[in-house]
Image 1 (spheres, rainbow, N blue to C red):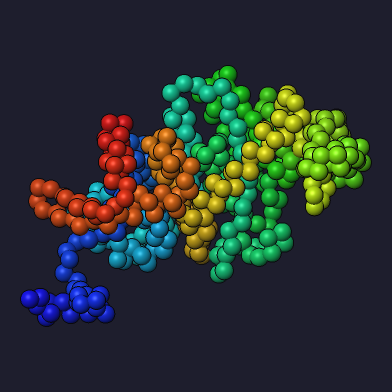
Image 2 (image 1 turned 30 degrees about the vertical axis):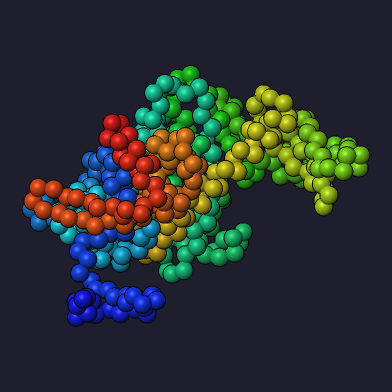
Length: 436
């Protein structure tokens, strides 16, 4: 007969069976999949290389938590879904996270991690970005023929008295306006900026540095700059022309462009009247704003649907058919917005520090968590049903695994849940990571 004194927690019965509980189950974690992050990080040498580029001014004889360990602790926790520093006052005792970080005792507390974040500086931000770009370049076994660099700003709302906060009339609230740069799904830049400035500020400097690095590494690589209408600036496009960088950017469909596209819209409308289906007509022509020195190629799209008509335009120096330039070359940039949303799913919006550089650090920590999960998705989940899953799905399906942990002087054993539905995939992932 069950000794109820050992089970002080009582729940309503299931038919004739009592439901009892206690807190004597031992070391149990809900984050057993964190070991996958540990292996990916080891294979990429991500936190190891970053820690080497950080100076540590602490008195080394009194240091309990190394920079590398604190980086892992914060990055892994973000990937697991723990957004706040306060979470670490409990997480520091989680054996699964301790094992992943590389420790056998308590991890850093929230106050220690807070001091770590507040020690961040511009030099460290540069070092992390250099590591982003280097990791991306190192991922190629052969020189790439083409790189498409997608630039896009986004808003991060702020609700306190953070330094650098400003009201942005476009977004309608106080926010920061970081610039993200992706090449496909690969994150290259997460650069925090105030929002009371030109939304494209520093784009030229960032693009210039990236082009210089990639051309030095791969002299023959073709580089394409891609962005929305905010990047359609004469100085920017002139720089691309001088440096043999191709571009495709949005172009505001002003009155002159609408006049040029009007015949094509009439044609699209006629085609719709005959077919009853959405019709699109693409056009190519030269266009020169009054203040510009010379004309550039514009691709226009006139569309008629059952509910509306519209005209859109882009500017480019690429050679292709107007339809392919618009649909395939330009519209593909929309996927970048999904990547930025994934940054938010990894808590890039947690920029609540008072000082500027700690907030830049938090944005970069979120980016580092993304790099680990994107690496898992693109390399190790290729060919599976998760190869296009967002980071929150990867977290739920592969990281949030219940496990009992037994740790002694010789071994650390993880007894994963017997009912975990993706056991075969998990085992295959571990085997692949071990041989990478």
